[in-house]
Image (cartoon, rainbow, N blue to C red; front, side, top):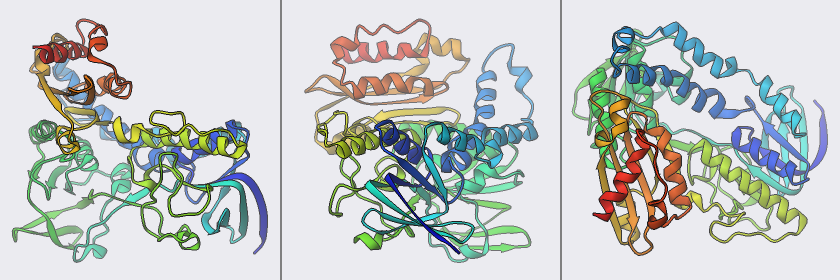
Length: 476
């Protein structure tokens, strides 16, 4: 066992997309940087979340779209080629190898230390390597914790006996279970139910709430519910699992209504928890296992000095890869500015403030139909005390929807702040709406006045014409 000591301007604990972007932005600001990673460089998104899940879902969504087109519908009527879909998923996950990620890191001159990194005090990190060595790292300016989140498992009797799937197993499994129980009604639950039902599983969803996607506009969850049920998914609302056991190769569940259910696998999609249990938070006065509270520059509150940052899922602000990378771009620039003694522009929408975390977080749910949203929901707007006009439009009435496919079903909602005459939230649900989300994000983040938005002419015949219809409806 050996020990070495190294010093860098910036130490990043966690080498997913967020950590990579923090280090790259710090390096672009002229600072030296190192990433500490205990698993694969590229993290959850590259190997167990975004890339593999969308690789599983893309053939499902593409087939659903093609089935609405005259002349194509008979050609896509058969089952998916499961082996081909899983092989595509494996390619998109780089076969769970990170050589390409390492090559990229080398190209931007950021060092990599493989091992488990823990804070040992202010600006101090100890890395225990797979070879049994210890590397002591010192930061001149900043340490950024970007360790992400993990699946949060509910306290169910017998849980430790059943080897449940989490999101990791759901995106990396190499066999299709005959019967799959999905516990949860959020994004992971609906996307994985969509994928595995299409690949041949009989999926049963056990949802504690009254509907799916309960943090979004109600119509979104209702349309996704209809789509899943049309595909053959059994959805049971107001249902929880009270006990689990694995018997004879199957998982047996006791339900809150006293009923029983059996499945070959069970996916627990019941939320996320921060990966902070073993990163040394106690050495700087913080509580292991907690979310890390930050200001809008991602400096951790409750720690003296401007040296500790928390970026991405670990701060609990917006648990999506694209939003974490946005945070990373800001945090890297902030660290660079503070290291050089330059002014920090942390006013709302300033170069060093993550204002979009509060006002303009975009999200797409890759189900059939898709859901896309940004900004506030009507419930959130009501709680905020703003004066809001809710503008709804049936997407099936847009000419582009008829070109998109027969029997199109969808809905759009725009929320207008009537005092400022700007858009503060948009939700779309329907086939193909994922490609509408960036236009909505620009409208919300840009605080574009409706009078100016009226001059943004949508091309005909596209789904984007819904913007004109929403504005016309609002004008009356």
